[in-house]
Each structure stands twice: as structure tokens, then as C-alpha cells.
Length: 360
Image (cartoon, rainbow, N blue to C red; front, side, top):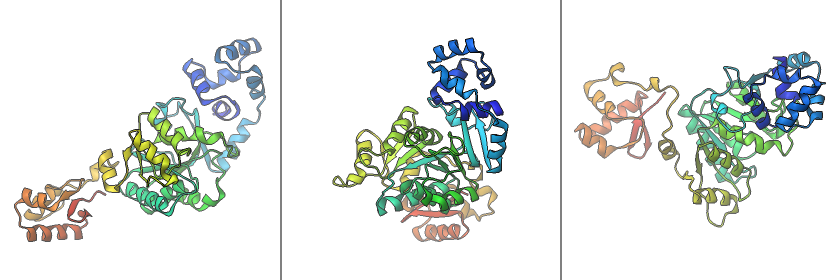
């Protein structure tokens, strides 16, 4: 683990070069123990300045640094570890290692929520609602803990009693910005995670944030840009998502509102229009992590009429007229049965007169 820590934390070359080194068959300990003549050839081949590697090899007390890290509740997972997030293995320039507090995202459905730091109240409330409905449907929320939209998305996920993960542009032991401290702590106390490719103690330098954006999009199956100006950093995340083959959605804004110029631009370029939260879930065909928990009517002990009505519903909203047509019940009978199933917690009314099975 000491050599893995050294390669992740003490060897200051880009993630792309580290990945290329690994792809060439080198192990971290082999790089660390290169002899003088080997360093010349190695650095020439991988286009690395020799002094960078020579100085990195002077790093000492790696065991002590690992112990200090553990005292802070920080763990390290690297790309050849079983617990490394599977989605990140397949992106361009995957981070060699992730330093994290709490838990790592599972290989299940996740959505990224990004947007402006100085956001409108409309943008903030939209991000909260989006994070909440995703969490309630067992979709993990990925964001960056920044003020504004990021924190609103995290807050919504926490309100929906779901998992949310923050990817930082600094060490995982540093809460940036400081105003996000409460969200930072709540993420950890609700079994989420704080992740970074930067080791503990790394300060939040401007150049780190575009790099971390590729991890936000990489961990996400779909990206929602909630509010963004024309030159917003969120558009960098959207570019990464596009490169990675992820679905991108944007909340539309008024044509005269500069806070939504970036969102409108994304829509113009082909992004999905996020104008309705329930439709967002439907359009993305997001599958629930615990699909085996979708209740089957045969296991519910329902009366015959209730079973018939319940069996014609699914996870997508269905209009009451279609339910009547499929079951043959009258309007009043259908309404009565739907109300009984709602009281039992088996059905919910998604919109007015649109019903679906409730998923646990």
C-alpha cells in the first residue's frame, strides 16, 4: 500500500500519464525503484522531466502518512483494487487513486447534479427537488459540494433519505467552501462519501476543479445541469459527460436570463430538456437499484379486484382513463380501489389522475 500511496500522492504527473505508465505494464513499486540509467529512458519514453521523478523518489515516511490518513478516517482505493468504482475504469484518464471519507459509490444508477454557485432561488429549489426525487427512487446523487446548485442537489438527496457523494477539488479532509460544512458532515453521517483524487492536505487550487469535473461525470450515468451561465464550469462537466457517452439534461431558462444561457446553449446543442421531474425519470429510463423490491401482487394478499387493478399498473404513471379501460371497472370503482391501494402504501398519484406502483 505504501507504493500505491506514493504513486497516487507523491508522484506529481497527470492522471493520463499515470494511466499510460500502468498500461505499459509498470507497477508503482517498479517506478519507485528505477535506477539512474532506467530513469533517463523511462522519463524520455513517457515525456516526464527527470527531476520530477527523482524528487518524488525522495519522499519518505509513507507509512507514517498512511497512518495519519487512517486517523483522519480517510481511505485510499486505487484502480486495480476491487472496490474502485467500476464506472471510472472506463473513462479517459481515470484517476489512479481516490482518497475518500465515508463510502464509495456502488455500481448502481447515479445522476450528477451541477450548476451555478451564485444561483437563483428557482435554480436552488429545482436542484433540491431533483435530488430528492432521485434519492427517493434509489438513484445516488453525485456533485461537487460547491455553494449553490451542488449543495442544493446534495441537500435534496439527503432529504430523500438517499446516498449522495461529493467529489472535491482539494483533499477529502478539507471542506471547501467552508460554508458547506453542514452538508459535508451530513453526507458522511448518512452513509455517503467525500471523494478526491488529491491526497489529504491538498488545497483547493483553481486548476483542480476542471479535473475533478471528469470524475463527477464519470461516476454519473446521467448529468443534470440545473443553472449555468455561458462560461460556467458546469459546461466543462457537460463536455466530459459528452466525451464519456453520458446522457445530458439541462433546465431551460428565459431567453433574457444570463444565468441560464449555458443551459439553453446545451439544449440547443441537443441536450435533453429537464422541465418535469417525473418525466426526467421516465425519459432517462432509470432503473431502481432494488428492483427486486418492486412489490408483486401475488405476495400482497390483495382482494381479487385490488389484484386486477394493481397488476395493470407499473412504475410509470398511467392515466386513470386507461386504467378504467384495461380493468373494466367504473370510474367510481377504480377511484375507490386506487384510494385503498394508496392507503396501503402500494400506489401513488404521480400527477393529477396519473397513478403508478410505489417502489420501495
